[in-house]
Amino acid sequence: MKSVKPKVIVIDAAHGGQDSGSVYNDIIEKDIVLDVSKYLVGMNSQEVKFIPLRTDDSYIPLNERLLKIDSINPDMVISLHIRLDANEEEMGVEAFVVENTFYEKSKHLASDILNSLTQEFIQTNKEISTSDEYLVTKVNKSPCVLLELGNISNENDRELLNNKEEQKDIATAIYKAVK
Image (cartoon, rainbow, N blue to C red; front, side, top):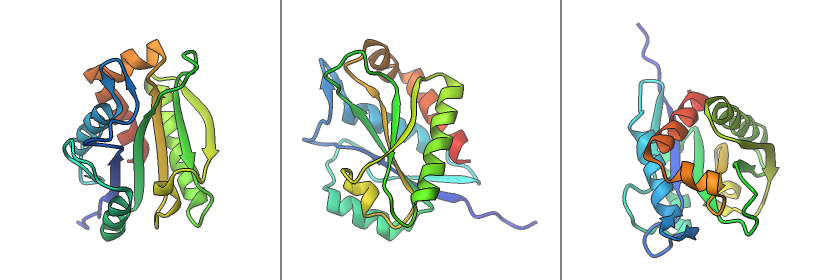
């Protein structure tokens, strides 16, 4: 029987260390995205291997993240974030890609992830946005999606994002999409 090489997916849990990311009361972006990243790594299988850029509350400068991604040479990259929107009514997951060599593959990956999250439980912004604002998506040498997992200032998103079981469900939906 022929062995199948697993898809290698880098998980960039945003922020870390002194960089908290979005904060609402005592709910902190860097902690939530790290937890989701750890759940993904726990789902490693023969088909999919998630490699986290950070495994603890350490800060990795963006240029080091990019060098690490390049050294891994993954099949794809998923960068996990949470937004803090002044409009508390805004909610749901958003996906961002950049128009580069991997635009179509990144867009397809983003669509698969958004569809999986929607099927599982979470409201998503079905639009996939193109943005050059996020360096991690722009400089990559592989398909890359930046996910904003929700709006921490929205009560529904905040409750979902701050719940360990819901974080596991988010990871499961991402796993199903990339598998």
